[in-house]
Image (cartoon, rainbow, N blue to C red; front, side, top):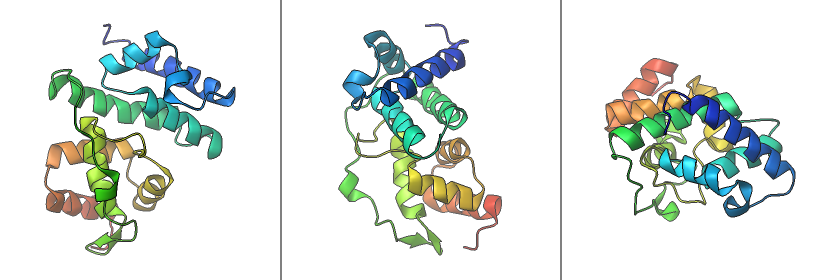
Length: 176
């Protein structure tokens, strides 16, 4: 694997995924050729991740876009290679265990739901039914002026929910 060229290769795979989705590919199995899927897996990324980005790209005016996707997947890749030793997880988050979308922590809506989603994204344990940086996540990040990759890195770096919430309040000026 050529680590130095990750961004260039990811950009090409992202572009192929967006194009394939535009041409009718609607499943992770049919979205990309086998060599792209193998390369993604070697970097801790799934074809489902690219399907989610491509689907939203076509459904939401280009969002989240290549720059956001690349930044997120760089954090995920770093965690995968350096914390998980390049080993894919065998357990996935149970989507039904997530807090309700309306729940708040210190008055901040969506955050109780976003925290376990971010942890699952970081560790590769997000089930195919969930996307990190879905429309609700994007609304949250825009409202708090936080980069999605920055939040993901903070979840890794800071660890505990209380510390992450304190950081978010300081960083975004949220009332909490």
